Structures are given as structure tokens and as C-alpha cells.
Image (cartoon, rainbow, N blue to C red; front, side):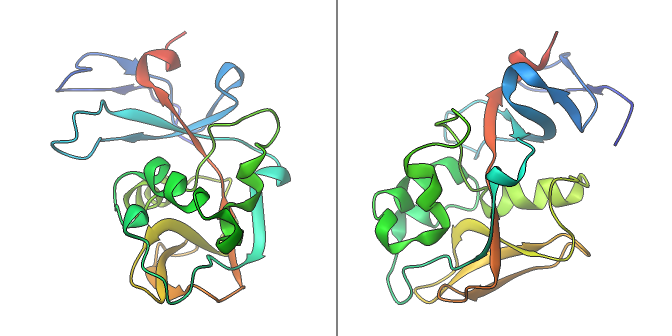
Amino acid sequence: MSTETIEIPTGQHSGIKLPPLGTMLPHLGGAFWALQRAKPGSGQADYAIIVPHGPEFELRKVAWGGAGKEEPGAACQWDGLANTQALLANADEHPVVAPLVQGIGGLTDLYIPSLREMHNLAANGCDAFDPDLWYWTSTQYSRGSAWGQYFYDGLTDSNGKSWSGGAARFVRRSALELLIP
């Protein structure tokens, strides 16, 4: 975990000083682990990825689901929230999102990170992910597979959607302004 604050040099949030990565922010329900740039041209603001701690925010030995089915709403490499919402529309086919239907720990805005969000979490050394597990992203790779992230060495690859050896870690996002005390 870094002990240095992060200053945003350019853009909409120029000059904002964020807490160090890994800082627990109880008012946001977890630890700050990534500054995520919004998809270019999306009109969305950059945001923070907050990773709640606790076993209830992780699934193990779970399939992504929907094998052989195209999921066009879950193909975005940038927006895990939108991908997860698309998967929730068919939650009965996607075991990886099943716990999110009712919410977890009173949080109803949890989602599975997208491919780019997961890259960011891995690059920042997020300690909430078990380095021995392969984590699903919310980003579909093809009709038969979805992207995953291995935290031991940062490897990213796809796995068959029906493979039940994956894990899922739920996160949430926050406006950057809410990170500042």
C-alpha cells in the first residue's frame, strides 16, 4: 500500500489530491484501490474504484455463465457497472452475478469490474484479491468465453463461460470528490 497521496495533473479533476491507494474509506464501504478513467467519448466522469473487504464480497468456484450466448451489453472493456447490469438482466443464466440481485451487506451498487478496471486493480496491487485465484471480469470475450485476471503475475486471458473454477470480486465506484476528507 502506498503512503503517498495521488494528485490528478490534468482534466476535469485537475489538482484534486486523493488518498493513498489502499486507504479504507468507511463512508464509501471499502478501500480506495484505483483511479479509473472513463471511456473516452462516453461523457462520464473519471471515478474511484472502491473494493469492499470481507468474504461476502467474493464468490469462488463460480462459472461466468451464458455459454454459447452472445452478451452484447456485457462486452465493454471500460464499464463494469454497465456490463454487470446487462448480466443481471439474465441473472438466472449468470451465476457470477447471482448474489447481486438482492444486494450484499446493504450495498446495492456493487458490480464486477470490467477488463480495464481489473487491469487497473491488478497493476495497483489490490490486496483484496487472492493471488492464487483466477478472477472473472464482467467483459465478454466471445460467445463462449469471458475475460479473466490472475493477480499473481497480472496475466489476463479468456476462459470458457461454463468453467466453474473462477472467482468473482464485487466492487463499487465513487465520485472522486467523495474520497476527499
